Amino acid sequence: MVNGSGTRYGAIAQFFHWCTAILVLVAFIYGPGGPEQRVYSSAHEFDRRLHETLGLCVFALAVIRLLWRAFDTRPAAPDGPRWMSVLATVVQWVLYLLLLALPLTAITGAWLQGHPLTLVAGIEISPLFAASHGAGATFASVHEWLGDLIMWLAGLHALAALFHHIVLKDDVLTTMLPRWFPTGRTRSSR
Ligand code: HEM
Image: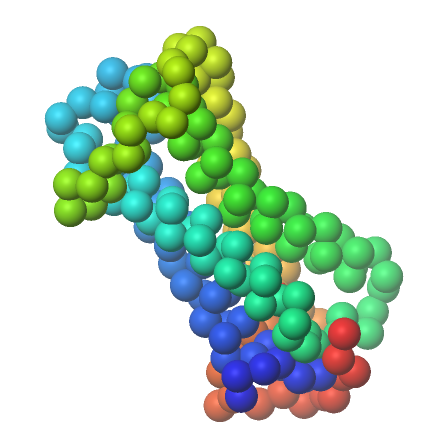
């Protein structure tokens, strides 16, 4: 099913979700990190190009996903304490915000430091505005900090999904899995 229903996210929403999870993880692993000299050294050329390319893909995917989400049907929150569904919703929106803020702070930081975006296949995108090195370094630090934050939040979010599945024994995890994982309960759509 391309569209979602009361019991499960649709195939497209699931595709966006799992692609994003993989891209974010690989981009984090290949993130060169550290001082500017290290990030832009020739030793980290491959890592940086891959990291920046994946970051741009994450951004594009997040924008398309949010547009799709506006028209798609999503499963309702499971029965249970209200604080749990409020917390889950807050975490999901912070994750969406981070998916947009991470690439934007990276691009702004690189350009303000006077570096082009360096992508795979030798593609480079020169700065679109004048350099201001100190401000660029601040954006680069914020980017690293947000990168750590998204990993912690996504980790907690994944643990919460497993907690629902193993301890609460509800359908939260299976809503984000393909149809061959059966769901036991019907929920109204939102
Ligand atoms: C193994 C890792 C992960 C698991 C098991 C997982 C599981 C889930 C599940 C079960 C849902 C549906 C929850 C519900 O409707 O209450 C969901 C939604 C969501 N997940 Fe994940 N997730 C993982 C990784 C990630 C990552 C890495 C991100 C982003 C960085 C992410 C972002 C989101 C967002 C934004 C939603 C809300 C979808 C919507 O309704 O628009 N997830 N996830």
